[in-house]
Image (cartoon, rainbow, N blue to C red; front, top):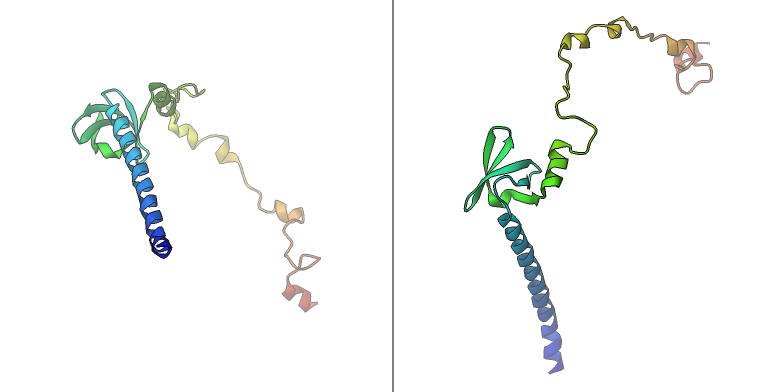
Length: 152
């Protein structure tokens, strides 16, 4: 009797492990479904690809997201990775709480100022390193290459 129990023990352990894994997976799946059920128009979400958007419409299997002002895209509900709280969504997307302002221009109105001015007058002195003695060839004490050292 004990030898038959020892024979079936690995199978019992395997079945127990499979049961625990499927139970865990079902719990995660149920949590994801309940999270997606929290979505409604105006809710901030993050897709599984990492894109942040605002929910416009929720269908049976799809959700319409506003990915930029006036730009709508239809996604599968399964593509929603997280439903975000309003303050978290605003902090991430709009930078609420940062010192940066949203209306600040990234490029100046007069882009020609980027190509004119002191930057054009600046000259780079490539001989400075040699004058300081910082450009010696490696492997010799006096900075001469192996060929120059053999010629002497």
